[in-house]
Length: 167
Length: 426
Image (cartoon, rainbow over all chains, first blue to last red; front, side, top):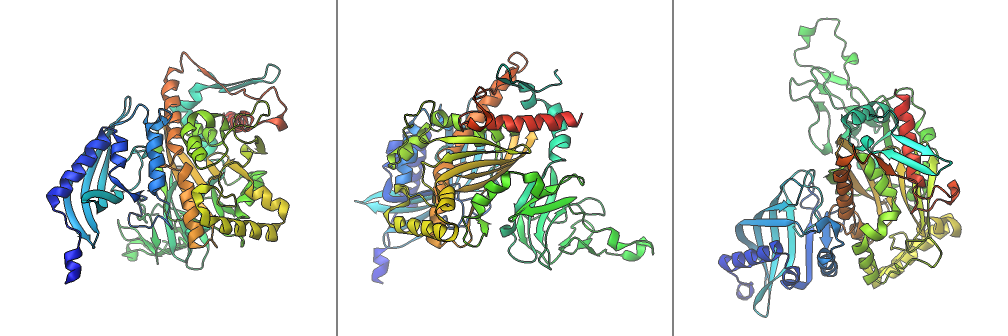
């Protein structure tokens, strides 16, 4: 039973607070602070709509960033030359149905539903609906994102268009 | 109203495009007849149908199509419309079928389209001939090196003639596979762009926009150690020289000296140090099989090909197969796949997919900015009644064989063909 004592622990309340804080940073485009929530080996994935359970090493994803790519993505999004997000979209994230789904000695697996509304001038409101799968890890006692997977429910991107902001 | 959408003056080197062609519902209606019902239109790739019974349903030029491999192994494109009352008989995106059964009244078809069974056949009388009620195939269906195309004009020339000079550029992609078998990799990108479909034809081959639209991608490449400074030669805007070419029948391509990373076979730091030896091995295989010159042609150039009217094969940071259809004058649906050699190892495949996402797709570092550019164009085109014409004359003062990828000579090829077909339709 010694393994049991080693299972990484967190309460749902702590995880919820963490996800809400993350959502607020993203909605405020405080991207450097958001990046600071990720571990140095963090991966960020948006699987293709029709193959939500696929592996990015053998299937074409919409987004499959390792940490280095994620750092570059944030650089890009802060640059006014990232035309798709300049001026930055207004987004509002609704996070719900948060639950801890598993984990091991250093990882906490979390699932949550999301609706991300995205607004741009002269554009329709777009609603990105789906669920997140997170792997969280404690570094010096602080929760960090080791993996973040945003899985969309729509059958295709279709009218959602591009996923140019961090979903 | 004007009857002429493209006005070219070779003496004055002007080429003007009526913006009405990009906003008008009447033009779109005419395009359906003059372009999409007359040209060879890309349906899918043989690799998407590995086994007998495999099928993919998709829209092709507005028609619902079952792209399938029948029980005997023959690849077909059947119109997905029950002969009884019209229902789509296959409603899944993809899968393997023993038969297609209509959900409405249960008419059942073989995978080759033959009508197999009708519930309650006695009510139809003795004259009812099941052989006359099979699923209707698209009128013409041919392939070139596993790329399957449909044509809704029975009198159209054969696909191999239609493709003209585009064949050579398809070969440059297919020859990347040691066995000549490329495959569509799982995972499709389907997204709308709020712009006229022809703007994506232009954008796919428009290298003039690279320094402005893709600044952040160029910065990303630079951070990865790629030299993105234009050479000193006069008139060059990009890190390497490239051409825009007319391939006949409205097909066109860019043909560029490569400066960016390519899974076949140009290493950049993004691939990681441990990929160096593997990329060298890919290069050696190319040279051994095809010789130095042909290997260099394949690996050291990158090319964005347009097969008229709506297929783009972009062989750059990876290979993307991209097709797009108009939904409305100001909206299109884009479908894009990643293509790779079927022999790739898991590590090579992962690298190809990763390289794809550095540039392409709705979450890539470049494509979203193309989408933004096309949507901004479409918004600006709303002033078409006052600002009636777009200028497409870049490079016109130079000979046809001196057109750079940053000129518009190759785009004029598309528009001339488009104009000719629209005129011909009356």
